[in-house]
Image 1: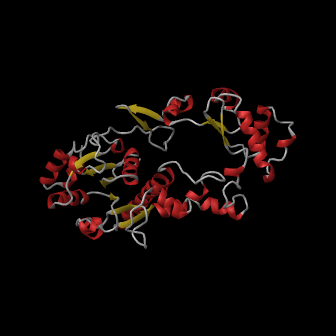
Image 2: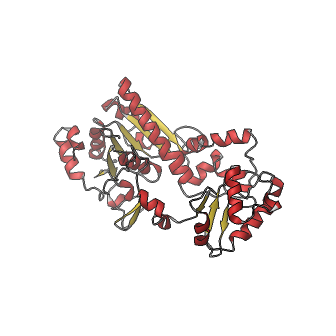
Amino acid sequence: MLSGIRIVEICGIGPGPFCAMHLADLGAEVIAVERGASQSITGEENAAYNPMNRGKRSVVADLKTPQGRETVLKLLEHADGLIEGMRPGVMERLGLGPDVCHARNPRLVYGRMTGWGQEGPLARAAGHDNNYIALSGALHYTGTAGEAPSAPITVIGDIGGGALYLAVGMLAGILNARATGKGTVVDAAIVDGSAHMLQLLHYLTDRGVMQEERGKSVHDGSHFYATYQCADGQYVALGAMEPQFYSLLLNKLGLENDPRFMSQWDQQRWPDQRAHLASVFATRTREQWCELLEGTDACFAPVLSPREAAHHPHLLERGVYSQRDGVLHAAPAPRFDGRRVEPGPVPCRGQDTGAVTAALNGENPSSAWLR
């Protein structure tokens, strides 16, 4: 779907590489500019193989040298966008800031991925996913009453509030550049994106459906939208909010005539209702509950690990997961016209350096993009 769009990625960690991978999954041509082995960010022995680079070409360049900077600038002459995830000011100090890059290519969309943003009192402070979503308010709603807030690692911040917002910003900028001939700088901050994702919750809070105090809202306090432990120590999740789904759940559990469950939305009863359902679900294993409830309109699902999920019949039929070189890969999303997009191969670090450098040294930057 993104065939013909060319992206240069200055490799880092976290949401920037995921954003570039996502664009590559959807058909964009992505050249990942990586550090040499001695400069590896993580220092891992297997850093030469990075699953986040699937579908990309890999070039090694030292951006602290004139040759490395010139490699990037030549690539940018025929690129639609650049993705970088350095702290504010680092790319400028390297001689690869927006002004320099736009001098080479005025149509370039310069994508900047940070936690705090390019401006503000915290812009140059270190931080990670949980810090950004803590400040934006997104972490506040996680967890239950009496427990410390916790969130799935990287999902809300790095990926949801960061990488995906940068991807949308890059595509919007590219569309605008093709219409106007003018590039732009995209400032994608995780703190901004994770705050933006709360807009629906602000609406629900205004209507009284959500409460700021944990344990007082449908999603963290009710008995019908909750996670329960089973007899085997595994967990299942319920989400039976609508009355018809709630009624079916009670029927399946043999509680349709139990007076304790007649008032679904009486918040005063939620703790007792939740405690009773906990005792009910503790009587059977997760597999037994799946046999009774999965595939019905009771809004039920087992809580699976990613490796368990890879073998679930529904995900198997949709081809959501696959194994490559012993690494679990999730299929590109979304799908188009009912067809699943096949991800590209994962390059070894620097495997395309020779071919790309030869093309650039031949003073034909455009040919560097040809595989």
